Image (tube, rainbow, N blue to C red; front, top):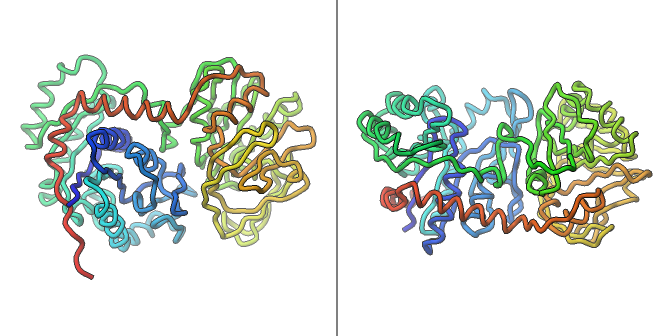
Length: 489
């Protein structure tokens, strides 16, 4: 029977996703069949799966660490925020509703059967399932109906390891406070803890480990020093999104309020000749940028208004007037057009809004969502491209007669008459090395020998080495419990 163990956090953003990815690769290198799982995730940086759905990008990275294809069962409930108080609910890869936070509080307990169904399907096909929690189990005000942390652990009867983030300070209070706040039945499932993001001499925390053990009764599984290469791996949370690189060619990216699928930026940040600058709200787009890249958005019309409120529309127009290029991907592509129509009120009140007018195209929002992995070529260079589409809406107009990609044999994208402005629906194209090299070379960037996929795998191996060196991986295996079979139907 498969074993399973759950990595929860004493708070958000403590490094759970990276730890699970590293453990996945560590166990795979021991010859085990490993699969990742996260019952509920909240992220607009989704990945398209081979079975035609979408999951959080962290689970896609963990699947890669396991050397398997991503599947919708790895993240059966995905919440994609559309406003400050509402989110799209994706269940087993498919959108089922858009709800307010309070409405989801009532809905989430009804999703547990789907969550357990996905979990048991995975467990039937591997040696161990590594489960990632969300947020913190100490949020006892959210405990009723919980499917993300202890609610799932109790339902699936699997042990839990708690992760504390020492970089934030107060890590002993994080751990001991969690122990104090939890119900005894929940607390009984926590078997151990680990400390993440330590800077300096790890031995200086020996006494701190002992204090945590004395106050909780949990096993101490080790202290992980800061892993400097974490920034080379795709980030899932927009709160972690920053610029990168120190090359001479500057790519400016407006940080939209509902930025989505920003993995497009990851390969560019690693190019030695490039620096990616995230333009924060209230800042101006730098005049010395060589390229403005408008990324994807979970709410195109809302983010178009946000972009204009920052004055970025004027900056983008000035950039083009100076003869410099602009690229829009997915939502950014839609914003570059003349009009965005939303006759059914999918993104808000029914109606239409004016776009930036830099591409002679119009977009009409439709309820049907496109979710697919794609491959093709860039027409200018003939370089192969791979990527994915994840969007609503159809875009058409005269500038689509100047496509710049061909995807699955069909023309894709649009180019302005002056050739400076381009857009497309395909995410992930910059991960294709030949295309990225050709695209940047036309902008005057010296080609590099970066092989993006190899770098990701090398970093996952380094992360696994890091975990093997500093955590008691054998104890983690020993603490994992066999997955109980699902109850009879």
